[in-house]
Length: 457
Image 1 (cartoon, helix red, strand yellow):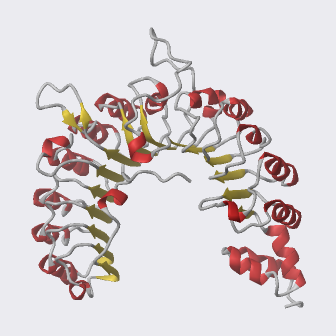
Image 2 (image 1 turned 30 degrees about the vertical axis):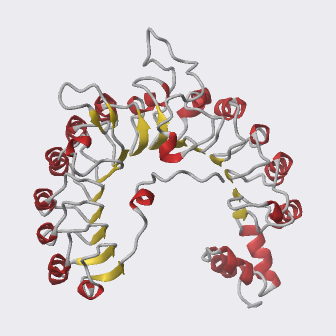
Image 3 (image 1 turned 90 degrees about the vertical axis):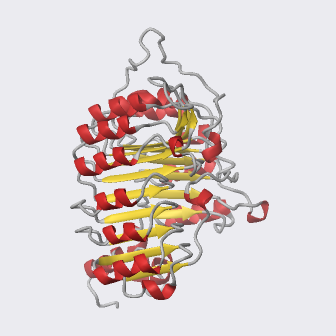
């Protein structure tokens, strides 16, 4: 080991990604220890870093070239000792000059003032209740170098506070915002905060540029058309990936504006639950978007290749509670080159829809969860899909061994996952793909749709 060239040893260390393996490797020889210390770019602090301040001093001293630091106190109790605080965050930023990515999760002793010491970040993920004021948002926004901003479950941060990020939106490439409370938090119609940039005479004219934004996720809050973070849907011309997860107050107009602005959209994920709408027909209790949204995406987003539709709280016996119909989904599938399709709770999707998928020339990955109208006859069509190699079936109660036999016979799948399809036996799935996972259990429908109450960290 001591005779090997240093360049070769450095390459060996670079190829090892697991922290536990790196820690073990550095004990083998002094040379490996020195190389690891100079090359290690990421570390994680948590409940096992005890005592916290001493552990921090040791690690910052040993690894001078850290670029990524994660502080995660999920599951912390008083028995784990003190957590890192604002002063420790200042130590990290001062002793790690290469620091560009910082993750803070469930940190009870770090608040807004601690973030003001982080001046050179390009990526920031915050999942802490104590983060509240907007001073750090204004500071980092005017600094203008953040490319990735993730804000989740921060009790004192509303969608309107994030508008104070100002010029920072110009360089941002990824933005993720989730209100505290999960699915249930999205039902809070009395959201705190107000929109300081809202002009009743010009409600859509925010003087904010976000044309670099490529990845956008909004979750679990209530908004209004052209107010608050909703403005992003019409301004992100470079957007490639969009996830709207239980965002209440949107309608077809928002998706239509999005489709006309974001011509490079490649992936869209919509998590929906029914609410009251003033429809001209029906009782007006449905999910936010209708086939008009799907048709707009089909018409304006030719690069769309990944679609996920999740429906929560929709009663099977009342199909009108889902604003989409199978006809609208078929139009989207036939118009775009869909490679990945995930349907969760899509009560409208049946054999006719499966037949359409059999002619989807580029479809490679299909996941069907809690789709009650999926039957053995539908799997017969799926087996004919030209490029399908990955198939997942969860909670599909009408699928039996007979339908799975069609998949076995086709011999086309590379991966097959079947969970909690009670009428499918383990014996039936053997040979259906190169990789087969079978289980009679799975996560509950509530967990799969993320509608469980969020447990405080």
